Each structure stands twice: as C-alpha cells, then as structure tokens.
Length: 383
Image (tube, rainbow, N blue to C red; front, side, top):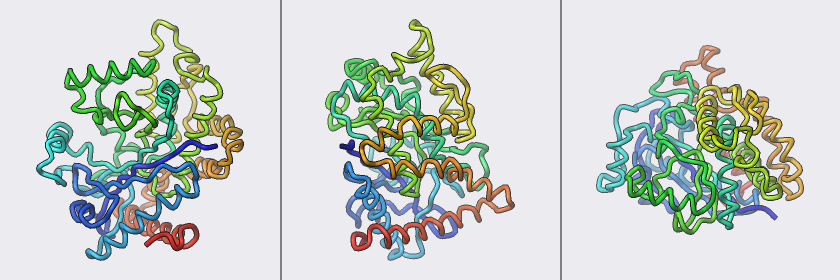
C-alpha cells in the first residue's frame, strides 16, 4: 500500500538564450491541463493523484513534452529551468488576466516577489487529525526538502548569495502561521484570518506546508508541501517525494513522532519556539541549502542539512522498502553527493561561466533529459 501523490508544477517559458517570455494566455487557450499564474511568464500544470511512482513519472514528463512541442509551433521558444527570473526582468509585472481581481490584489500587494516557479507536492491523507499531525511534522522538517531542491541562485542576471532566492523573497502569508494542534484549531484560525483580512480567501495561505482539500478548511484530504524550488529532474523529484512519503508512513506507525510531543522545548513555550526555529531553519536552507547549519527540532543540536537528510534517509528506508518504493528513494544519496541545481550552477559560475551561459546550458540539459525520459519510460504515451 502506498499513499496517493500528485504535483503542481510551475515553469517559465522563453527563448533558448534564457529570456523569459509570457505565453501563458496562448498556452491555456490551446492546451488542456494548463492554468494561468498571475504573471504570464510562467504556467502551471497538475498531475492526477497516483499511488504508483511509475505512473507519476510519466505524468510529470508527458505534459511538459506536450508543452514543449506547442512552444516550438509558436516559434523559437522553450522551457526555462530555475525558480526565479534568473535573467530578468523583475521590475515589471506581466498580468496574465487583467480582469482577475485576485490577481490585481496579488500584483499590488506583492509585486514580482510572487513571480517564481516551484513544485508543490501533494500527499493524500484522508483522516483530518492524522493530516494535522503530518502537517506539524513536515512543517518543522520542510527546510530539508527546500535544501534538496534549491534552484534559484540568480535574479536579473546576478548572483544573489542565496541558493533559493525564491524562498528568500517569497511573501509567506500570513506572517505568522501556528503549528495547528488539531483540525478544529485550523478551522478556527482560518476563519479568523479571513475576518481579519490577513487571508483574502482560503487559498491565500502561503506557507511551507498546508492542509488542502476540496472545501478548505472543513473538508481536507491531502498535505501540500509548497516550499520546494522547481525540480526539473523527475527522478530527483520522485526521490524527494519518496522521502516525504516514507517519513509520513513512519509517523503513521509512531503516533509520538509529533513536534508537539517530542520537541526539546519546554511545555510552556514549545509551539511558538518551534515556529521560530523552523523559520530560522528555512532562512538558512534558502541561503546555503545542503550546507546550511540547522537546529534539530527534537534535541536542539546544530546539524548540517545534508547530514540531517542522510540520517533521515536511513531512518525511513525500512518504511519505503516495506511498501515497495525504496528504489525511488535511493537517488537521494546521489543528490546529496552531487548537490542540487543551485549548487551545480554556482560551481559553473565560480569556474568562470557567466550567468547567461549557466542558464543556457541548463536549458539544453533539460530538453536532452526530457527526450531521454520520453524514449526510455513514456514511449508511446507522450504526444
């Protein structure tokens, strides 16, 4: 038995030279399964929820290949990896739907800090109290998933000093989100935010992880991890997802694996201090990714993010093996050895490549990678 899993993928469109071009109005009008983002320079597609990782692999690749073929029919356009406007322009907002009042609010309130590309990982959990426990656990460990995925060290053609410039600038909303003690706490808190205006609607909860469902905050059926930068390599994305699923299985079998039960903080200060610890860890992971020095929520020790992930990998491996998806978890080890996209790109930059050359090579590498997956895995399924 495996949990259901699905993805929301945001990706930029543009030219092989790395210039990002807004084409979402044409894409949404002519391709099924794609939806607008407030800015026209990126577009989103979602995968149906599957339990099987093999089916998820094709579900990730197939729409992207269809999108790539469509872009080529429009001209010399392609898909651009990365989670920020690496080569610009972050000074101007390009509205995808000028008549959308919510988009108008987003542009006026946040500007281009929201014009980022990312992947949201959804894991199906139908019991609302188990879901809340999973949200608490994943919330305090979300910096680890960010550390694995960082892919935005550039903005406007410059090195920013952060491996995830996206998460450094992204306006987490509301500013303070508690660790939800139970489903009732989440309902009451959400209703209060809507009255206060700190949330414009039930979707306007932009935190590292959130409960999700068909009628939030009342009917919930999945955990949504939102912190990850865009991971364009589907094998790496499935490995990160497998780490997340295996950790949730471990939690389901061990009810005491809960930040409200096992944290080293005193009872009187634990929830608030855990939130602050997590915020600090997120900031460190956004800046240094796998080399970030984090503070462990269980015992307070300072630990390098990559080392914490290595420990977690060994801890959850038996749970992945017992449910038949350990082979999808195993690429985590290679990712820890080789580094994530941001680290690769920064190594190239430090070797003398320009930001433009780094991104242009990443664009070529992405297309070659997709073609290999199409030939080997999804042959006959991708249009």
